[in-house]
Length: 193
Image (cartoon, rainbow, N blue to C red; front, side, top):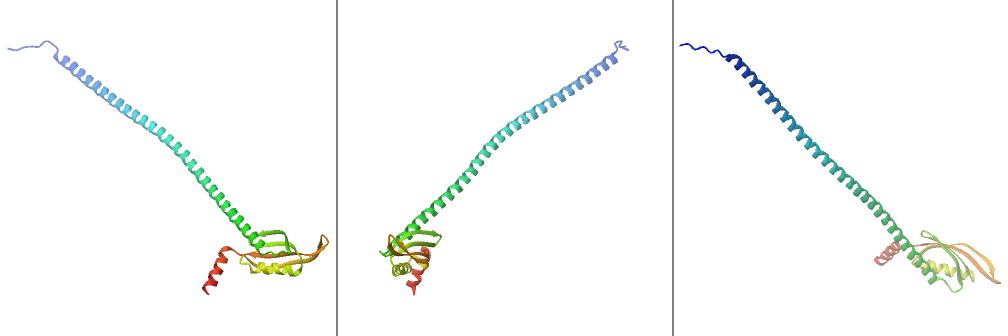
């Protein structure tokens, strides 16, 4: 017996295949859209993280620049303090240097000689004063020359003047102050001989 199907099964099958292809197409499109959306979301989150990290690094960079500026200021301040300490040391050394010089002059000056002024430039000393006689000035020069602190005593000028109706000698001496290190070296050489 032969059966005849009067229903158009081919058309229904074709429509079913078309519907299947359309649903597969839309499924692929939806999956592709979801994938693209997830990739976009992931990259957006990475971009947000990178922006946040960049802001954090910029903040750290600004803090480090500020600290570097403080370090440069500290270096400048330290060098300024060191320079000032060196100046104070030189002044202290000069103060004692002058004190020792004046003390030594006071030790070797005879009673009949008076000093009017003392000036120094480095180790060179210039001294002006009054003496009772040429002999008093010569004794003063000899005492200075025998002093372990002075060297090269020279009489620049001596002249006769009258002070309070008394004749005196006005003089100008130039001599050199020996350095402590040179004086110690001379003493060691003299002791070794």
